[in-house]
Image (cartoon, rainbow, N blue to C red):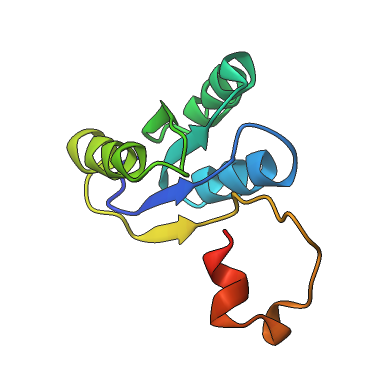
Length: 110
């Protein structure tokens, strides 16, 4: 299946995000599986996605580092093309809070 639609899913190697990646692939999207630690899970997911006859790449990157985020998106541009959708799911909260109540000072902590 040829596609011009491209999705990047951060933290996509397992769980709900892996299922989301498969759903995008079923809909004909080229998929970038971003991950940080589980190389084997990312590669297994890539093999599953390739069965849908779409392009799929894996990119290991630490999104807390600007240079690695830049490399992630540069890789997507070079290997898949122009991004259509970003599912930005990566993040670790140090303190639980209702997002709507956050201040700029709270955001600066992260």
